[in-house]
Image (cartoon, rainbow, N blue to C red; front, side, top):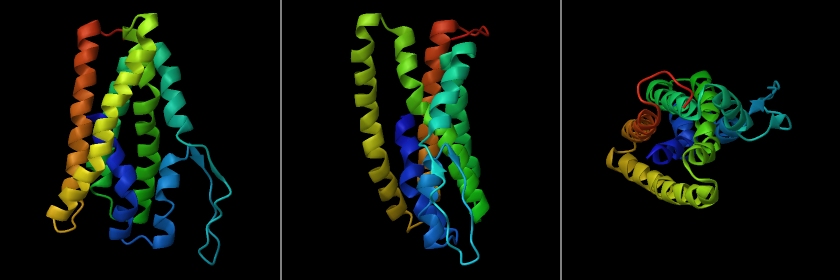
Length: 199
C-alpha cells in the first residue's frame, strides 16, 4: 500500500508544479530535486540553472535511516519515515502554492520516501531465517510492485474524474501511505509489543 501512494508524487510532481504556476523549465527539475541526496544549483540572471552540481539519487534517504535504524530499531525508523512521507503529501504537497513550497516538498519527500525502499530489505532480514531472506525480499518487492504499478494509473483516473484537480489524487496518495504505515505499526507491535524497544 505504501508504495502505491509513494510513487504518485514522483509521477505527478511536475504536473502539480505547473498547476501552481512554476515555469516549465523549473518544473522539469522537480524529479531530479526529489531524487537528489544533496543538491546545489545556481540561478543565473538569464534564469538558466546550472545542473552540473546535482548529486546522487536518494542517497541520504536510503542510507541515513539505515544507520539510525541499527541503533533505534528498523521498524521504529520505518514507521517514523513513512509517517513523515504521509504528512508531507497531505500537509505540504496538498497545500503548496508557490515554488519554494514545491521545492521543499521535493527535497523532504525525496529524503523520507527513500527509506521506504532502503529499509525494506533490512526489515525482511530481521524477521526471516537466513536462507529465506532473498526469497522473501523478492516476494515483498514483487507484491509491492503491484501497488507501485497500479498507483499512478489510478491516480490519473482520479485526476480525470476530478476535472483535472490534483487534490483527490493527493488524498489517495496520502491515504495509501497512511495505510502502509499502519501495516508497519501492526508488524512492529506484533514483534515488540507496546514497550519502547529496538525493533
